[in-house]
Image 1: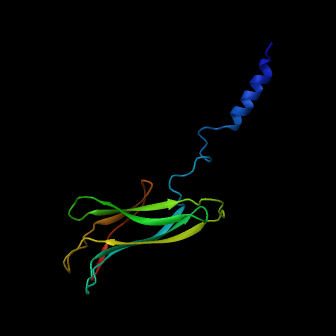
Image 2: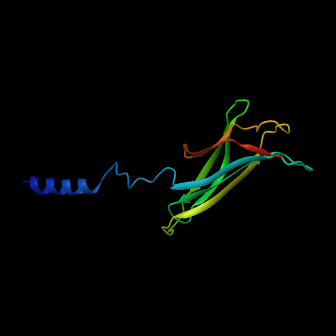
Image 3: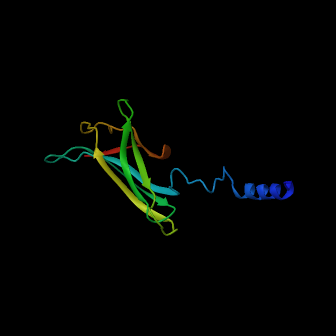
Length: 145
């Protein structure tokens, strides 16, 4: 004959230990905790074999040591003065890592649209995304001649 009371107590005990929607257990999609000092400009300095470059830089704070982070060019919208998307890619550590807040300085140099001297910047702004989440929007984007 089964004993329902001990079985019910055991199932309640186990159900209390396993939380399916526990927000603490689920890792964050974008691990960036804080960010600062974002800047973007077009380097259009003249010179032999010079080509305009969009330079984007900033600093992010991550939850532990060992992350590999980088900025990658993304798509630009199709307007006359587009907003350029830059993707922040964060790869977590493979093994054990110190659980200490870690800052990472980031910089991306990519080919830029050109504009004649004295014209407004070829970009309306730069949008920094991390796993689809907007971290920053940089505007205006100045051009250095």
